[in-house]
Amino acid sequence: MSSNTPVEDTIRAKVSLVCRCLVTFMLLTLQITAAFNPQTLEIYNDSHLHSHHKAMQGSTSSETHFRLVITSDAFDSKMQPARHRMVYALLRDEMAQDGGIHALQLRTLTPEEEQRQQKKRDEEARAKAEAAAAAEPET
Image (cartoon, rainbow, N blue to C red; front, side, top):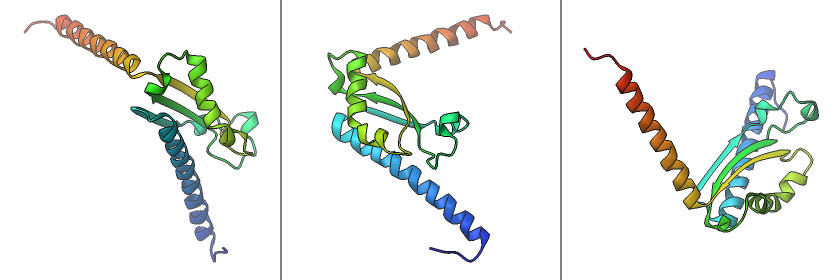
């Protein structure tokens, strides 16, 4: 579709970029949800942090680097490498496409692991708050 002004061209380009971002995000969400039924799914697009890399020069895709946090019972009794292989196998086609996903950073947890980590964070925050309160001079 042709436009009449440079402003329209700019708007179309930005809308196209947003649509591509949403498509990749939704694709990841749908595939991971269907395969792993996650209790937690966090998807971060870190592509902007890598756009200056030599391998990304000339790339037409702004959807190349993702960080995923997935908590699922599907990971029970599996070591981290096996969990990562499960995710890579699921996203194989998206990673094989020219201009597709170039890199994934994965954090794969079982619900029990996530609970232990949350408990540890809560305890650390409580200890930090108590230490800060104890360090305040009495008035």
